[in-house]
Image (cartoon, rainbow, N blue to C red; front, top):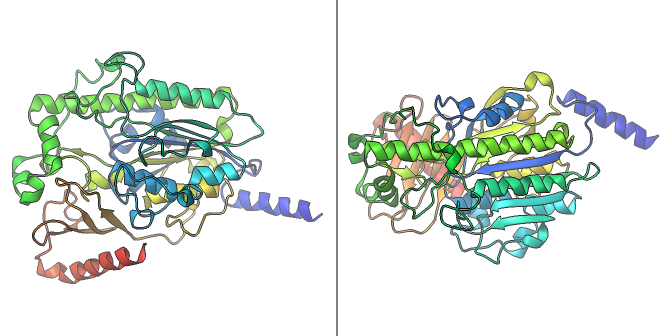
Length: 456
């Protein structure tokens, strides 16, 4: 009688929360992560050129977050934040060689899900620690690799493209799943990250070579020489400018590079379609929650820069889609404007699986937003970038709904930025010396220091 009462209560709670009452069982989880994928490089996000029908379909069936960000825009740190649900200030992964400690491995989302009975798989770019330091034994199926990986793993410009290899591995994992055991599969694509130091940068599969040939990619409004010269010396001589020279220095190279970037995204999109088809064929799609996200943003030449790292919107803002087939049909295709962060992924996956979220995790569970609820939510977040590189100045700051403040930490003079995103969305008018915003500047300076002290 007690068990029956609990079951009825649970079913009623699920129904009232926007989920279908007949799907009380724990869902399967599919987390797809792309690399250096800026927030608006999707058809569903408004890009009129890039072709992403499969990812757009996920958005039409789920919820797209229009204000999703990373708390540190570099692969190793962002991925560590995704695994741990923590800011870098707490997990301490600020370079490519530092691995997770055994204690940290015990608290990353795949380990916790595995202990809770999930069949776990990881495919692709692990991103944390060098070779030999990945937690292979914590997964039922592990096809991860350290470092950046190569688009042609077996031979130069030959064999099977890395995106296709990873997709085949994803299909293999799904083929091994059983209806009586939930799974969590994380597919971490290298695409559309550049292949450094190859001069071509974006190495897509040959079958995509003619895609986008008949279009001209427009330059962003701030991709001008005047905007670049408005930057301080340390940015004009930064690694981001060096990579601009490689990719965007001429109109022809700009077109070639962005089209290559788009081709890699479309290849991932096709792969997402194959994975979803496999789930449908296996009868698993209606109990599989899919989360699609990018690990960093990406400059398309804005401010005369390339790559990421710095706290401009282009660098820190990413795509995020959550498709939960158990959600009420009226919620499909909705967007949410609340701030979602990479540190939210781990607590969200654990919450979906009904696994307790460790108190050490600093992110929020996104599922109430997916269910159409309106809980109290963050109004700002802390950004930090402490990767040590002579051409990448370290920075930290706070991004609110309207303002973004940041300061550079390892330059030979004070360097601060304050932008009003409402009146200046392209971030060209630094308000640090503007008298009307002096109180806002003081408040955000103090908050930046307070966050840095409190988030450890």
